[in-house]
Amino acid sequence: MAVPQHAVSFGYGHLLRRLGGPTYIGREREALVFRGERFSYGALHDRAARLASALAADGFAKGDRVAVLLKNDPAWFDVFFAVSALGGVVVPVNFLLRQHEAAFILKDSGASTLVVGDDLAETARAALAEAPGARRVLVVSNAGGVPGPGAAALPGARDLAAFAAPAPIAWPEVGISLHDPNLLQYTSGTTGFPKGATHTVSTLLWNSFHQVADFQIDARERYLCVPALCWAAGLHDFTLAALWMGGTVVLNPSGGLAIPDLLDVLERERVTRVLLVPTILKQLVESPEVKRRDLSALRDVLTGAEAVPVPVILRFQEVLPKVTLVQGYGMSEGPTIATYLRAEDAVRKVGSCGKPCTNVELRVVDELDRDLPPGQAGEIVTRSPATMVGYWGREDATAETLRDGWLHTGDLGILDDEGYLTICGRKKDMYISGGLNVYPAEIESVLLGDTAIAECAVVGVADERWGEVGRAIVVPKEGAKLDPAALLGRCREALATFKVPKEVVLRTDPLPRTASGKVKKFLLREDPAARA
Image 1 (cartoon, rainbow, N blue to C red):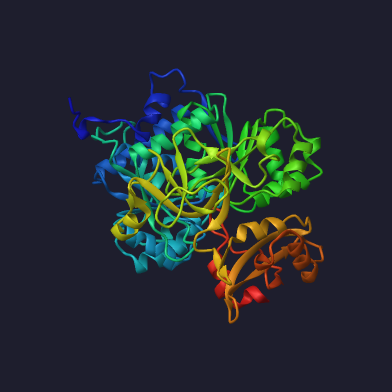
Image 2 (tube, one colour):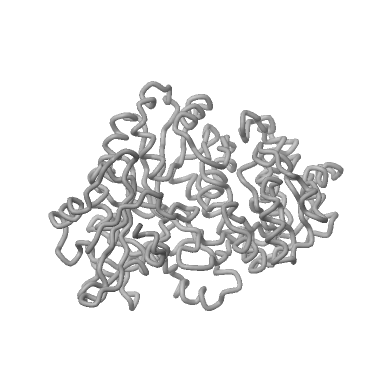
């Protein structure tokens, strides 16, 4: 017997009813820690329920989009769970975006509500001038613990806490289907304007459930969330899964992350798991303080976005011998963790991001979508119930990316004869020199073997003789001196001649990156400053 879609009513909007409701034994269990303030599941339940009631009374309708321009703050969870319970769609907006970039997302998503931190009021004001469609603007005062101008800076805006306070602690009854849109996760825009990856109630649930199984998440979890919640890695890598299982999320404030501060919170909060981008991971293992801290509760450190050099892996195993280093690969389109490499394979399979997670099928294919043999580079395609259903309002882009049920990631990879995946780079990053394919990731791995290099990127640039040649942009570590000729010599020793870059450019500024940590190579090709 077919079950009507409207009869299905279970998703993230109901999590707090299960964990924080008045009849659940875990109501007093610690759910969230932020800047030393502690929130129980009961407190999160009451806050989100009041907001849901207030929005419903204010005319919020199922399917309405809510843009969230907010740094890490407890209000993020109020909004996510309240909007999910009402059948609405959450639209995270990266707080690093400029006004016209934020305005693009407001217009593209058709958001009728904007939730904004008062410290970002000026960005919101300018964005709303370009995209005036949001008829409801709610301001989070003292957002992230940083005072700002508040609702007064935005004409017609209301303070979110004052808006929700008079409402009853009750969940409006809304029929929700597993197929209803629940979140628009805008891509980082490595090649241009971002696209809204549309996730449903079902795809979000699948994204968390597989993490519970693959990483053994339970109520004892104390996960330190370092990434911003507006990024896919922030909200969807372990944060929601930990909350689903009744664990605790220690939320790191947005902004610069100093290693001593990171060690303080890992030690004080008895953190069991943390996700760190490779640049922070490198700083962590180089810190002399690590061995002096009590990190006995820490089980896993996860990393991704780029390959971790062997010296960093070996140093990690030396300074944190009882902690598992897990390298992974994922995307905004989902799953946000599609593959992972366990510690026992970290050196044996160096450069690999592991095998697929339990709810992921993965292939490497040629231009005609035919499977390629082990050792041959091609496009990575995945199939999973955690994959988006398409790009919001972009039928052409959806048709190009989702074909025959497979997500064409645009990433290039190689499977070895044991099924381990190695990323070669973006399909659009590959260049052809003298008729031969060159994969920048292979060259970058060789360069990063020099411990004096902080980060590097290789891009293809036009050349009259060869069509394209490589340019390596290298950022030295602070105080280090690098010789471009010596770096080219290193490449000649390790690589075929056609793969050796034509030039090495030293750069003092960090490489431009997306919110998820990927290098914006199109800027390095186009921006003359990359040569300075």
